[in-house]
Length: 107
Image (tube, rainbow, N blue to C red):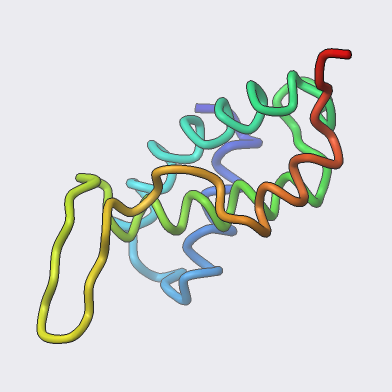
């Protein structure tokens, strides 16, 4: 992993309010490159300097990684009245709105 992705992983666990959770940090370090790569592909590398995203895209990566960490197996589960359906399966509307500012489309 790189220092850049490790720094984003630290921001993810802080976002989740679990800065002292080493196991969650280890998962975040594994998951950040996945979401980072998806963001790079979605924007066709616009908004990136090497692997380093601009602040708006970084916030999307933090948000999406947090959703992926909430359900890394990507399975449906329900406990009482709380339900999680598939975790991260796509950008949410707000994430997409930010990413679309950088996305290069054909035309």
